Image 1 (tube, rainbow, N blue to C red):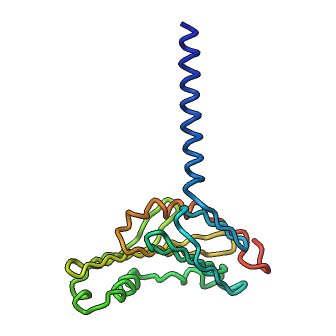
Image 2 (cartoon, rainbow, N blue to C red; image 1 turned 180 degrees about the vertical axis):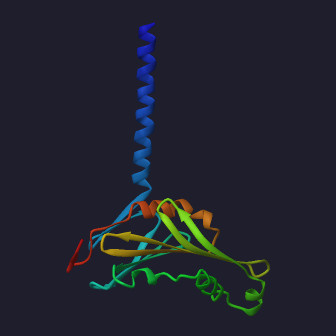
Image 3 (cartoon, rainbow, N blue to C red; image 1 turned 30 degrees about the horizontal axis):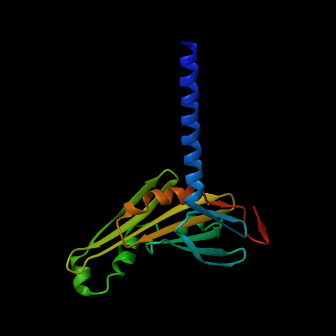
Length: 189
């Protein structure tokens, strides 16, 4: 009887270990880490940083592109008296920003725009979604999330030409893996 219990416990331990090991190795195989000038950005392996520009001690912008041409723009601003004003206070801004992406008047007239507050494990943000029905189908989804990191305010803006659900889990993955240690050689945090 004790031998059977020990055997079952060993088998269970092996199964648990292999599942945990497989899960951990898959996480690393499906992600890549971008490290530059104090920013650590964990991304899905199919997403690539295409631009990283900045003005020391002022603003830095990192642009990322997914395999489906979804984009992520990360803006890093030093905290200051106007930091809270960097994100528009009215979601109407997003409505007009998205609607401006429609190329024709007929498309704009038939477009349906929804907008509001998005809630994620990492905090709140704003979203806007534009859907133009057939025959001129178009779908644009924009979501901006604000994060605070010691001396910096960081805005993550995701832009997709597809339903938000396609990349939704990747947003949380990217936000959870983001770290900032410094923005320029002159500014340590």
